Image 1 (cartoon, helix red, strand yellow):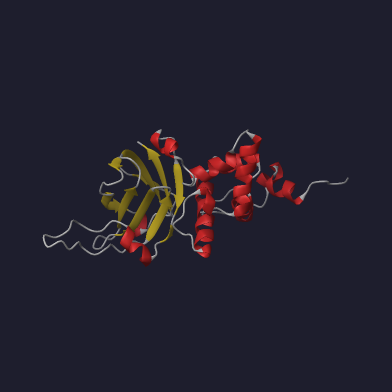
Image 2 (cartoon, helix red, strand yellow):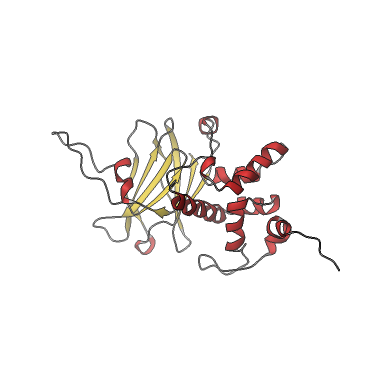
Length: 244
């Protein structure tokens, strides 16, 4: 029997969901392979596979991590707009726009914290799944600092953050507590109009911690969580952010 399927059919069609299986995050079970996710993150997902990704926050987080690595390689680590995504993925979004139908690749970009419009933010339509990326010391000057300025006008030095979760106008930073083993410090910075957020931290052992809702925004101090209990003293590997 002949098989007329193309490479794209195999990569992006329904059969891709039944592709290689592997173990992620110490969980045993069928998973879409890391290779398939990497190919989709750079070249776009077929509709069925895209919906499978959208249904799994961990896959959204993995796509975001691939884009973070790509942007770091091309020197665009701080960009969060659609223009910073791989050209193949941007082509898939443009095709969806031209077709005028479902736009699951754009939905994946949004879920990974990219390409939100002012209208989206104003209507609180977002729901973000962000993967941890390395915190570069060159970022220290652009993030919140400890405490307030002293009477003579000198602010305390920047904190030594360890991981960063970055999206359009939102950044979450985390580090281990200076003196309390098993605790982490978390900071949420927002460049949007003030609104209330709910942040959930996802740990390497598969558990999660949802923090109390906080309100922050442009021209406001970042929202700070000074002591968050961490399983085994680990740093979060993924965060979810929604309007509260």
